[in-house]
Image (cartoon, rainbow, N blue to C red; front, side, top):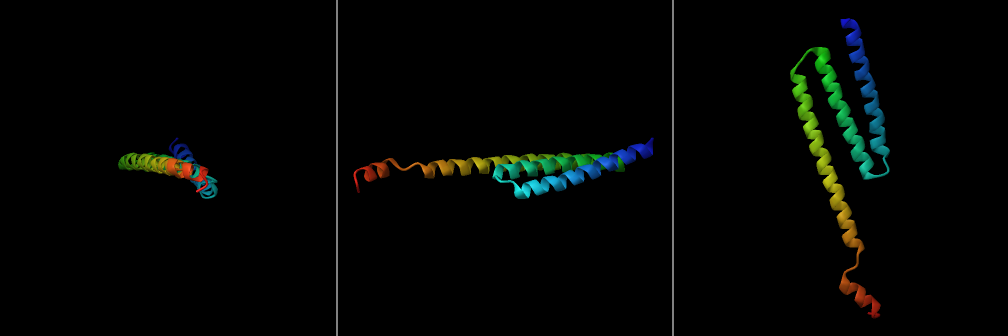
Amino acid sequence: MTNLKNAALTASAVLLAVLILVTLVRAVIGPRFTDRVIAVNMINTMAVAIIAILSVRLKEDFLVDVALVYALLSFLTVVVMARLVLVRHWRKERHAKPEPGEKEATEHGE
């Protein structure tokens, strides 16, 4: 039973590693910034899962703490990136709208 458990844990860790590589490709070619942020978040989530799998496989309890800290840092990263996206969007909107004085000046032929 132990061999089957170890084989299943190893196979799942390898599968997650392959999925991380596929997601990394998506993060690089993603057409938008938000696609890249979501891909990086997925990579971080899969990394947390791999650390948890390693914790069970190696019978090391401290790796669960490492996984929790990594998950918190990953969450903080996503929050900061979302804030950057919002600020960038607000700046685009502000620069796209002409100032009220500028609009009137162009209407009068100045």
